[in-house]
Image (cartoon, rainbow over all chains, first blue to last red; front, side, top):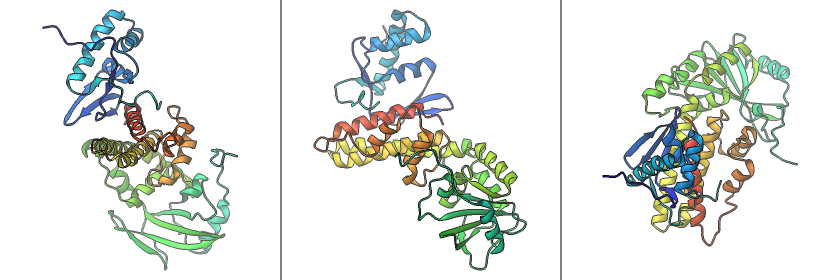
Length: 103
Length: 268
């Protein structure tokens, strides 16, 4: 069964009730009773979710950071973000996030 | 003129202070150290500010008029003497060296790693640690320098940053719940609280402490000048400058989103 992917043209936003910690260089994300530790690439993707950038734009940033193809970056990033979406940590922007205004 | 310029020096006459303390038997001859702390030491004093001094001795010391402050240490009291000199009220607290050792043990890295990041200090204890880092030595510079290093090498920073971040979580959770319950005005206050905790966490992570004195936050922001948060942006949030009073919800969401972004960058 093919892995889920977050659509390239859509804008992911972090759910409001997500808590984060940068503990000794590791990024921890928690929502409710669930928590996960992100690796370096995962942290870079998660930090790139600003409520403005599309999945494609986020992948472009990852491609540039890690010198990989846009195609590979998009495949890996969108699959990762889809996993976060399953956990409720990320959702599709519906215009209510408030992101992108206070820098 | 910017009233919060970081270019200030505490204007004090240390020699005169030392002479006055000694002449009035407030500075024991065998004191390990005496140092000015708080707003005067940081150059933030106002005309009505007290002069706060800590004196450290091997054996507990008290003046005749001193008042005891109970502390969860051994001995379980520190003595505070109130006096007036040079137009100011002075509060001189006397600590025993052993009490300082116990205090530092409470904020050791071992304690941080084992106690689920919860610091159990009372205000006067936390105040000692915070003020140690910005104190002005009256006597005993070697002791002061060594103690400062011990505080810097402790988990004090980690404890207070973690505490502020926990405050962010709680305030943000409150704001979200209040929005869901259509208590928008309450959510505004919760979001503002979350912002305050976030700024405190950022400043403490940079070593610019003072969380137990909220009125100092703008001064701390000026002194620390964090690159990720220009003062004007901070002040706009602190004063809710962008809040639309007729439609506050977007401001709440913007602030909570900002808090979320910042907590990813503040390293514990």
